[in-house]
Amino acid sequence: MTTEPQTPSIRLVAISGSIRRASHCTAVLRSLPPLLPPGVALEIFPLDEVPLYNADLDGDMPPAAVAQLKSAIASADGLVLCSPEYNYGIPGVLKNAIDWASRPGFASPLKGKPVLIMTASPGTAGGVRAQAQIRDALAATLARPLVRQHIAIAGIAARIQEGRLVDESTLGFIATGLLELVDEIRWLAMRSGEAS
Image 1 (spheres, rainbow, N blue to C red):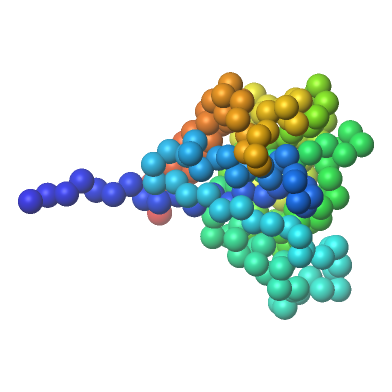
Image 2: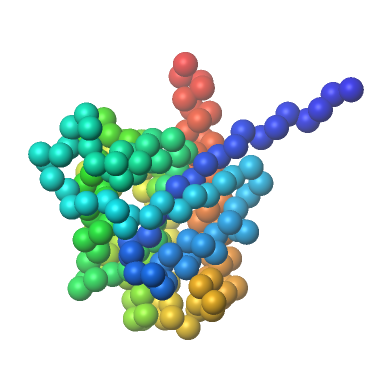
């Protein structure tokens, strides 16, 4: 008797750019598991305990939360970021996490990592200006932000109910982005296998 080969499991780590308890961005990330293709798992990594970046602490024994952040990113096949926009830009908490995870320079856990970026805002632009800054910061780390139509969710407060994103059209758009992220991960894995 033969069995069908199992699809390799893909692990995604999701990071919210807001540490607010009732964060809309965290609510968006909590809504993603039902949208994932089979064989794909997603874990949300909170940034609450990650301290401000300090090069004096950036060595072989970083703060525990930093070590956990780097380990989570290193073991993930891809990342999903969802961030608000603060004063036309990237929130400090997310930039701080990228700064920690970007070390050591050009050889960090972010290098080569596929990333799906989303932003959400109560306003009409959906945080798109922050998205541009997030892309710039990730480019400096040699990460691989997906090149696709921006997922910028406007009027987010009206799309959240009981801590979950409920707007069907937005969920469908995000589901497409997740599929593209998984396709990118699989393509990179195939290319890596061909090169070895």
